[in-house]
Length: 215
Image 1 (tube, helix red, strand yellow):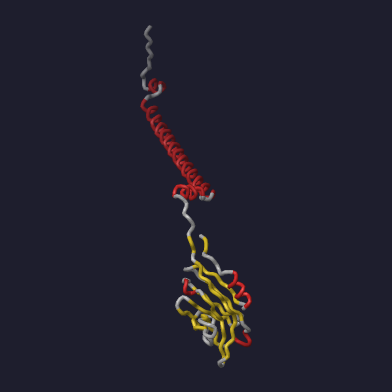
Image 2 (cartoon, one colour):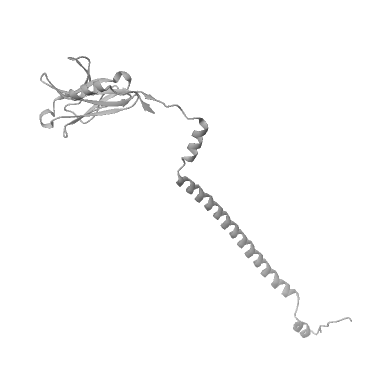
């Protein structure tokens, strides 16, 4: 993105000469302004944020809390203000900026009809202009190439772990199958030996074994 044109040099020079702070914000964005003061002298004075209408009139926008929890934000629309009486800092926040929010503002204090300007701020709201978009195909290539290398390593480790797990399961199944087969073989062999009597047993019973051979 690129931003619209900022203030012209002549206006910038005028702001510098009048001790005006220029703050830039993007349309729809947020800006914050800090206005400092002497906490011993102005701690409990009324503090406010106003927009300069002409040379003599400053239109009130929002005032800070005075006696009850002044550090809490007081809000008027999209503009809020909070007062840190211990540090002597008045903070103004403008959200969801619009073009009509641009202008000259003041942080000021009021006490018994006496007004004291803490700070003058020139707020400029810039419009974000989109650059010419790239073709869809190159942007797709760019999004693919922008994948961090850590993601590739993570995928590799996941696949490798899955393959190793499958291999271990296959080996375990094979070992269990071999063990069962050996066990069944061992159970069959004793039964076969019991069916066939030995020659000594036959002779003891009066039966002589004979082996015939035919030529």
